[in-house]
Length: 390
Image (cartoon, rainbow, N blue to C red; front, side, top):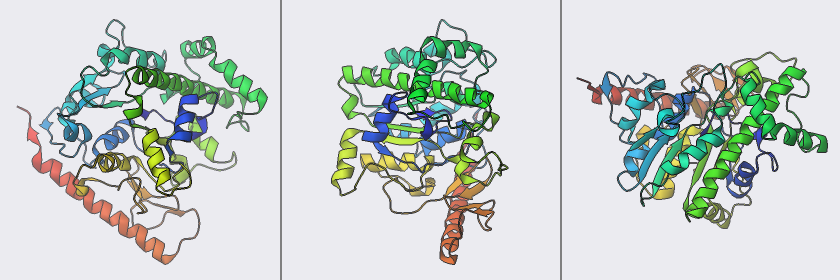
């Protein structure tokens, strides 16, 4: 599940109990970073990479030979869910090439309801999840499903409709109760009331996603499939409207700089109790994995867990259990960073959080060059194997 703009600081035992359960009983990665547009983060989590030369699916057919849905079919039922028009980001044309057997967009999820309007407000994730239930497990096959959510996209606190729904559902009351008890502190408490209200709106949106997650988990439990299901939940980028996340990670008197890498942290957890138990039984002290990770790790992690061989040339990261320290390439700013260094070109240091050794700098630039080489090969692959559409 790609949770739009998801941040770990929204996870709370009372406000988001399902997410909280996953971070406590699953594997939680507090140092997950992602900085890309939603569709790029989306495809990275499905394919393991995204070329610097964008796809043009209206003009060409592409071969995604290492994508999860293509590798898992025909043994697995594969489906993609997103409550938007199927033409947005060319998903209707591109995703059959990626390997999805079923595509469910707004007209399939809400067949009797006109598509929502940006000016009115996003649809509730809880409503989307309810509508998705009849479309899940339509065969007896094992399944690979991908859901890209919407509600927490932003802008925040501008939709009167959503604000009223959050009020009616009791989300705001629950936030205020936890605030009064001191168990929830508004991350923007140092800012004006308008920013604090925006954060409450965003928190309420995450609460509704949590409700949606509970709906799906309950359905799987009834079907006897919950214990056999591996959940991977990650954020595509930070909540950037009104510089919301900037204000959380930086003090009010600091100016934003594009190279401040902590701005790009986002939520990431993997949940399956058997997996967590196996990880702990292997000698690890707890379920929190502190290593620097990114959405590039998702595809190789799934293949590693399933024992499926894959072509590492197409992966810009190793699996999350690897001891290797990864760095992240962002298509959005065409830069490289980890939790210590940010580089605009992979060669020179634009910013370092703390002084690094020459050996570490050499490692960082060497890994950046490997990524550049891989991206060049990936670009060449798609250019050479694409077939014009007649």
